[in-house]
Length: 305
Image (cartoon, rainbow, N blue to C red):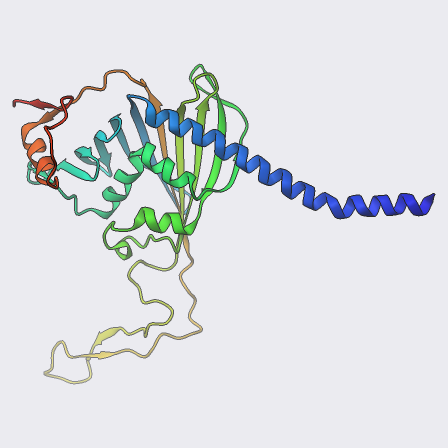
C-alpha cells in the first residue's frame, strides 16, 4: 500500500510541471485573444480621441517628457498636437504620409528629421502599433481588474521581443545619437479593456533603457584615444599627441537606467472626428502620394485659411 502511494505521489510530482506549463500557455493564449479582439474593435470603430502623457525617469529622477492630444479617424487619418520637451508641434498623418508644422520656419514640411519624434509618431498610431505587437507578444497575462473613470476594465499585459522592437525602430534616423536601440531597450505594453464594450480605454507603453557610459563613447572593441596639448615644445601651439590607451583597471562609468512611460487615455469613440486640414498641410500630404486612380476621399476637409 505504501509503495503504491509513493508511486502515485512521484507520478504527480513529475506531471505537475508539465501541467503548469500547459496551463500557462493556455492563459497566455486567452490573454492574447482577448487583447486581439479589443484591438480589432478599436480598428473597426470610426475613430477615437487620444490624451497622452509621456514621463521619463533617469536614474531615479522623474521628469515630464511631454503630452500628445490627438484624433484618429480610421482607417488612416491622424491629427496630433504634440508637446515634447517644450517643443510644440502640429502633425497630420495619412497612411505613411506626414505633414508637420516646423516651429522654427513656420512652414508645413513632409519629414520631421527628428528620430525621437518619428519613433513616437509610430507609437501614437495605436491601432496599427497594437496589431503589429500582438503578432510577436511575449509573456502575455491578465492583470488585476481595474477601472478607467467609471468603466470597469480587464487588464492585459505583455512584453515586446527584440525583433518587434527592431521593426518599430527601423528607419527612425541615427539611433546612436540617442544611445537607444533594440540592443539596450526593453518594452512592455499594458492595456485596459472595457469589460462591457470590449474597447481599449487606456494603453501604457513602458520602455526601459540601460545606457552604458555616455552615448557616442567608444565601444568595448574600439581603441580609446584622447588628445592633449603638447606643452613641452615651445613655439608649436596647439600641437597634439595621443594619450596612452585607457587603463583596463580604470573604473567604468555605471550604466544609467532610463524608463520612458507613455500612457494614452482613449475616449470619445465615434465622436467629433472631423478635422480641418490647412491648405498648406494638404499640399504637403498630397505631394507624397504615389499615382492613384480615382478622386480624393470625400471626408477630407480643408481649411481655406
